[in-house]
Length: 214
Image (cartoon, rainbow, N blue to C red; front, side, top):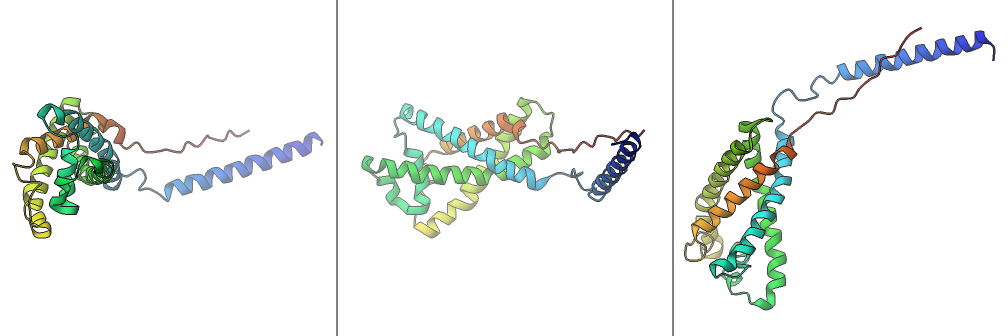
């Protein structure tokens, strides 16, 4: 290939590169809504659900470890929560059924954590922003968790469980003391506060290398 042919080919490549760069710039200009300029609600709702799973696991482990210290079965909390889907007979499940109790209860507990993680993390993201201290996040997370506990237990379950199953075992202090439920939610909120930075949104930006001309 002669020098003249090479120069022609090089000019063609440069022209094509310039066209591609113009197309990329036009595509970027056609999507001005990215990254989102407002609060990214959908993202933080999804993140809250994911982190809520970890919050539920941590609070459950703490309860399983701490229950024997209070003279209770490690699965006592699981049994109480199982009264919502299966009623009073959940409290009388024997040790022979512990595998079933653990499997069903953990699924219910973690699923609940995923659900309540959404509003709690959304609230935390609104209030705390990206550069908040751990202390602030703990205060906000624990406060939001206690509000969710009060609404869920005494605003919903206090009448819904009796209406569906004929008893209020979850909110009955004789079955589960309020401080146990409140403490569980506090641990949940603290866990979200610690994991909070993992869920912060960082927009992906595509870098386009400039084409150098001759």
